[in-house]
Image (cartoon, rainbow, N blue to C red):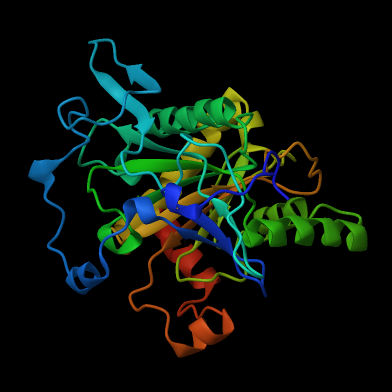
Length: 343
């Protein structure tokens, strides 16, 4: 049970809900605060993003929420800023309450939802300088540390959507930070899998994986002193890439400044190889880190996962089994991406 959740209240008073599947334990967000009328779902075919109406070019004029973090250049102009989402999936305005119904369990959608915006409306992370990507990581860490001890926050998810097909409704490059009261089953699987591997093998699974990939080189795209970027052995999608640190560390918020720059280099290289190699496809990248629920997760390792969007959506097999089909061997994908960086 998440911390500080004890009282029941009518669900109609909330902007969103977290509903739990009674069989699998999976969580679903019912984001009523972002909802449209049912008949509006028939209008989902929209024109490409209109760069002329960019709400992030001048956030004050487009009446975005007040900045919680802003980085400025020497000339006084901003280089990066963070502000609360105007249309949050989770809101801190009320206390968390249980919203159960019959045999079903649900929670009010309480939490924090922030936007991280870089200055240039045209340059995605793949095209930024390494120091600029490091600045983005610095903002992620800054906001993570600010949110992790907030009431009802047990997990913080940081992600970046690139392209409309990947969920970016605004073309201006931006990331999102969601601080929520629950830990997803996907993270639970990683945590329990890491612990089980350690109990069975007496070694930490992410260390074993990273050391092997570094030695074999077959799936490595880029490597420096602090991290390795590689296509996972069991890639879920074509050109999937992970960036994993070499120092055992479950917690993203505990990275050092030196590690931050090295991670920024690996992330930028991987994104640029994807950008050049497969013609700037839509993709998502996100950080997986140990929860901030006060427990210890010594066998886990924080990391970044990059998932280019497949050209065709999930069909019957994927939807019915949860088993994804990738159309290229990760070894071939890694070799091709390495070639992009060598050119």
